[in-house]
Length: 262
Length: 332
Image 1: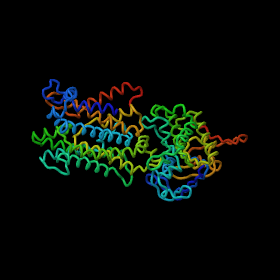
Image 2 (image 1 turned 180 degrees about the vertical axis):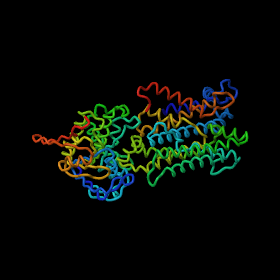
Image 3 (image 1 turned 30 degrees about the horizontal axis):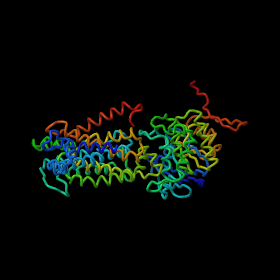
Image 4 (image 1 turned 90 degrees about the horizontal axis):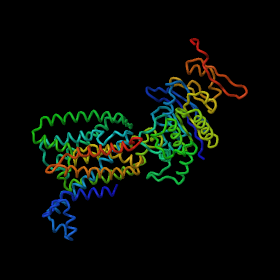
């Protein structure tokens, strides 16, 4: 099992016109940090910065090492990413697509590891894709492709998993499966999980930490109970929000009070 | 596929061979074999045609077909677009401009083993490809959408200049230029084969060395980045390989369309999307299509040749249509 890794940022600026403005945060190793906030608040830009897709200024490190000093391949061995996006236009089969997650572990001349087939089979099994391993990805629904993309990230066997809206396009039962799988990965393999999620209910159920954003800035950052309270959420979403705690189950419920116009 | 190519090469090699004294000129070699004769001794004229005209032409068709199909495959995977072709970065427009300049200047000399038309066509093709690349690149990043749009703009400019030169050319120059622009393998000797062979070796080896990278790029550029590919370097290198393959072919044979578009499609439909299989399949498939097209161009009309580009378009599109109709999910 690989050592869990943390992200640290100090004075981070990135995005068009320095949209992410002077962000400082700590994403703990082995935790599940959800990035939440309204549309256009900079969540995806932040993920793209963490994954080296867009240039940045300031300090950003993974496991204490500045990102600039980590090669692309080394980074891919440490961090697996499930981006938002459509399926490719070319008809790779599901198994080929998932097997491409082993690329970071190959030698420079393309020789893989002996453990590659096991890692791919395990990833397919965990995401419930074994039965459709021979199907072309161009024939899949968006929800099925979302699971294929997650399977590829699992095949990468990286200690950090970054996901941009992993429950997008999924029906309720598959959302539960995916979130429970991620929770198991964090619990059993100490993976660090960073994900963008719009559903506060899922966030309060599964995440350990929350990074609440608005207009490229961090409104609040910390443990779930410290961040998901009415004042911070109302500020971030510019709408009055009510948070109710169930004393018996300890679960939170989020809702917007009945609007005066209705 | 390999066996089909071999049959295609043999048919093309012996079809239409004049057998002195034979009523069936195309099967002179078979007659010689049946009679137990030494072919070269019995048919000296045919042997000359076979070795000095026919064989280099067919080998050139094999190499040019392989180049165009491989360049098309690389471009399609790089752009993540099944409609990309080898000429997407303006290679054909640059080559056409270079060749037409050579025809208009009546420049008749040889440079590094290439005649002036081939030399200027190659220079024009690579010049335009490099210009498009330099204009589309911003720092270390290379945006493929910028590259595509810049390619369209520069191609349009080159085509405008080419049209102006053709418009002001004399009749004989115009005819020669148009004949070249339609593409032809006629009168190509072993010199052309030798010139192209170096690019074939470099192109095929490099493409195969990068088959994993091509897989990842075809699965999506962002995903390829997340799996550890250095996008800037990889895209530059692959663009260079595809441009060299296309430019060297255009310089030797003129502009031959459709091969680079249709063969990668057809091979994907037959063998799947993995480049480990697709690269050799495209090399053989492209070679087969061009050998057969050249045969049709040569024998379809007696006494004259038809442009090979026209034949590749007809054969390629019919083949593609059949594949489309037979495949329930379409060709991808």
